[in-house]
Image (cartoon, rainbow, N blue to C red; front, side, top):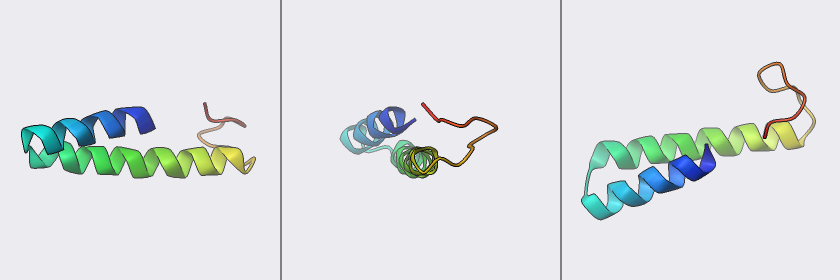
Amino acid sequence: MIVLGIILLIIGIVADIGILTTLGIILLVIGAILAIMGGMGRAVGGRKHYY
């Protein structure tokens, strides 16, 4: 999810498309939150580890 967010962010900036930039930032933040929660040992979405 983090990688997809980065890709959308880059495409949105290069092509000057605001919605892709916004979606990229949102996916990047959500991916980072899930990765942090998974790294702390919390169950994310019913799973012990988030990969």
